[in-house]
Image (cartoon, rainbow, N blue to C red; front, top):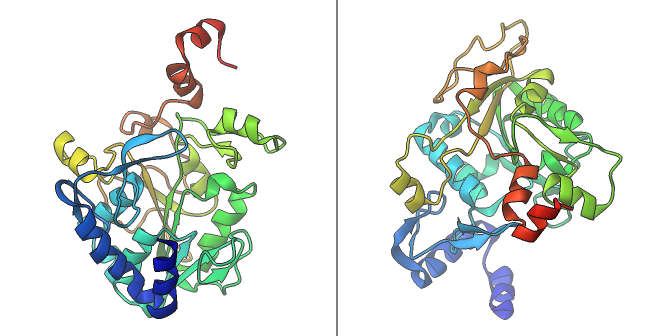
Length: 306
């Protein structure tokens, strides 16, 4: 398998590798039980995946996860989001989403990552080496929970967007309120508090306030909410997956003056936000403490977690 990968890297241009992988693995895993919105493959099953293993999670063909397929479904519902963009910035690129973002025009796509070799360019999201108003869209999924100075990263994404440009931002959500203590550096303690040793906070859905506080108009979306339970299971998406669609207002524009496509009215803008605008409409994961109680063996529950 390793030799095959090296041969592909040596003789197949990068822009064709995803299509080759899709065609090859699509035949190996072909079936009718599951459908991946990202690579359009029909497979027998999705694999389990995650720090806490989740069933029906990862596509064996393109590697897409539940959140990737939910976003791809959202793009299917609102194709104008991509067809109306000229230049896209992809942060910490996921292969399956990169395929969707590049389909319209590969020349307009730029990816960045802090790790060498993981993207087109090595770059820190808190200090982007791009001029103001450089991109029409930014895609950033499950990155901000790894960054100490997340507000700086959000502000940088807003800076490089053109007026009326959009940023699609996803983070793992636990409950309503964000919990963080940047003085905690121990990986084991971070895992206990935030779910993974490389996370620096556990976001609540109030992260929308943080995004709005950095100058965005923010729509809180649940792309797959309209699917039936059977459809959601077959497509391997979580109906409660939350996406934050953020728009950069034009200078002098009133907050949320221009409507973006979506399932709900704006939940936040640069105006003071009322918490009851979203608590009644959006369900998110329970706080990590409750998840740990559910996962602990009976003896640990009686003794108390930790």
